[in-house]
Image (cartoon, rainbow, N blue to C red; front, side, top):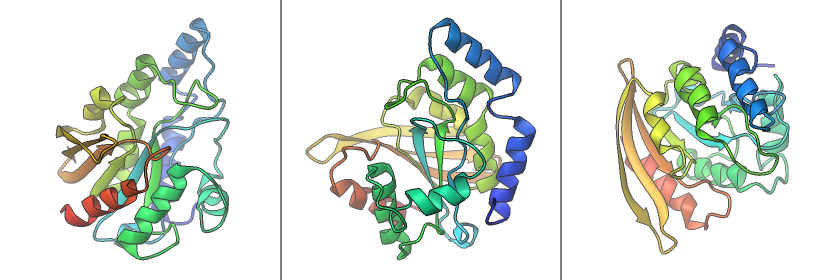
Length: 232
């Protein structure tokens, strides 16, 4: 069930592109099988697009690495709001908790309706961690371009890639053209921090590539919030 026009357009795009069923996805599955790897039975798309997202001056999309476990299906727009967003459910994932805290600082709201969330990779071969190999990355990001097709609809001004350095070689395929600088590691824990600007068509998108929130220290929240607020 979609909540707004952007979620509706995302579902229409999935209906057309058939993630998990299209020819390239079938080729990916076959290659994984030959390597004794099992992909998720259902690919996971956009978690949700907030009802206030399109009206924000800064339209922020948070991008995880890949789904874990057995998610999927068309109920993610409802399920993410009801079962995963921390104000509605005591979920212990730092992916959700830290994103909630960042959104609260930037948009002064505890609800998920000001942002959008998705994953860079729509499938996974690990039940409890990201073990995505370069073949899967190539099929999903470079060839199928699912994340790019999502961003063409969402048109964010700011993107937060929670991907550490493990996907850096593939970030260029998310955009028509981009520049990226792995500028530094910050704080005493050497948190990876890279900044860039990408374009899809004439649409400019600032992006930050940093670590995944899982096991990140609490100052992660303030660093990312400050970047969103201070970058325009």
